[in-house]
Length: 414
Image (cartoon, rainbow, N blue to C red; front, side, top):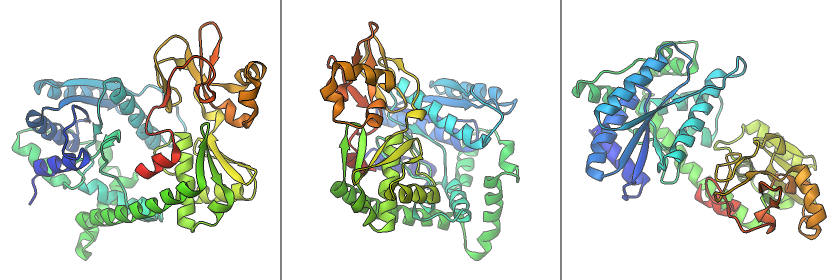
C-alpha cells in the first residue's frame, strides 16, 4: 500500500510538475486530516526546501474555536512554522450558514495567501471526503461536473488537495504513529447535516461493493470526461467568442447551434470569468438564463449579466455586485489590481462615464454604456480618471488578479 507520505509527495509532484514551490500555505483546523497534512508537509518541506506558513480560520461558530486555533498555533510553533488565525467577523442570522462559512473560509485563505506571497494553500480533504461528496452530488442529480467532485488542483490554483487519494483511517494512523492527538469536530456526528448522513450511508453501502475507494475512482473517471467536454467548449469559444473591453462577446447563432453540453459549458465559463466566481452556476438556472438571452432578454446570473445585442451576447460583470473602490495597489472586486500609487481603483460608473463623454467622446462613443460603466478605473487624488482599457490617462497597468484576462485563453487553461 502507498503510505500517506508517498501519496502526498506524488500529488505535489503532479501539481507542480516536479518543480518544488518556494512557499506554500497550510489550512489547519486542528482536526485529524489537517493536522496530518501539517506533519506530512513539514517532513516534505525539510527535503524539498519549500517554505511553509499555517493558517487557522476561526468562524466563531462554536465557543471552543478560539482555543482550537491557539492549539494549532502551538503545534505549528513546535515545528518552527509561522501561524496566523483568520477570524470571520461578518455574519448575519439569515441564509445558509454552512455555505456562508465555507465562502468566508475560501475568501480569508485566498487573501492570506495573496498577502504572504504563497504559491498555493494545501487543504486536508481526503479520499473519504471525496466519496461523501460524490454521494451528495448523486443525491442532487448532478452530471459529469458534479460527479467529478473535488479536484486535486494544479500549479496556479489557490487551493490544492494533495491527500485526495489517502483514506481517513490512514491519516489517523499516521498521527497515532507520531504520538499526536487531534480535535474531533462534534458537527461531524450531527445527523441533521448532509455530510454526516452521507458518511453513515457510505458505511452501510460497503456490503454491496460501494466503497469510498470506488466512489473516489468514479470521481476520477468523471474528471477525465469533464476534461474532454471542457476541451470541446474551449474549441467552440475559439470560433464564436472574443473580448471587447472587459465584455465576452459570443455570437448568438453560433452558441445556439452548439450541442447542449458544449453550449452550457461555454456560457457557464463566460459567467464565471466575467463574475469572478470559481464554481459553475446551477444547471437549471443557467439553462434558463441562456434560453432567455437567446430569445433577446437580458439575464443576470452568477455576478454577471448576459446582454443580447445585434446578434451577439455580451457577458459582463454585473454592476450591482461590484465592490466599492479600494486604494490603488489593492485587489478590487476580487478581479483587478493596478500598479501601486496614489488614488483609488474602482468602477468607472455613471458619473465617470458622464465625465469621459465630455473629455473623450470618441473613446467612449464606440461602446455600450453598460460595458463602460463596469470598467476598472483609476481616480487620482485630484479627480482625474484613468481607464487603461480605453487608453485614457497615464499608463498604469491594470491586470486580472487571477488568471488571464482574455476569456478564450483562460478557458483553454481550465
